[in-house]
Length: 141
Image 1 (tube, rainbow, N blue to C red):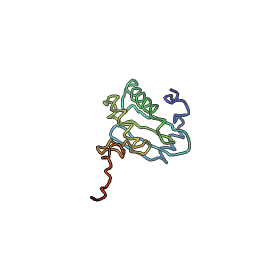
Image 2: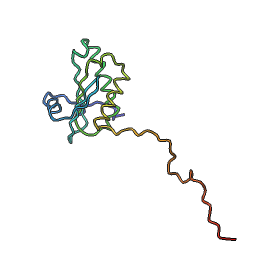
Image 3: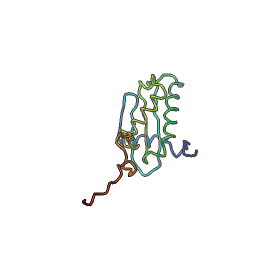
Image 4: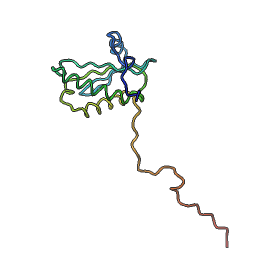
């Protein structure tokens, strides 16, 4: 279960690194949050920005951060290397935990950091056992 940890190496902490991600990274946004992604050779790292404009109470801001950190921990092994900074927006305050998780995961997919889930098709697989049995051609009378 070591993959589900959130060590210091997996965090964007320094102001300079936040600034670098904001200046050189690409932004993908939704009404609830904006994700800034900077592709680099470093490990997968997450930074969070949840201001008082999003939620005036520390409890509310910490809930948003806790939910996003938890989802990041679960997905960290699948993410492309680089730094990710998530900026929460005021609609995140009213969102429940599941909606926050889903929106974060959707942003990661849109940003190209997570592989896009392919829906299961309705056509059968190319499995020889599913094909009709072979009938040899007749060789005359």
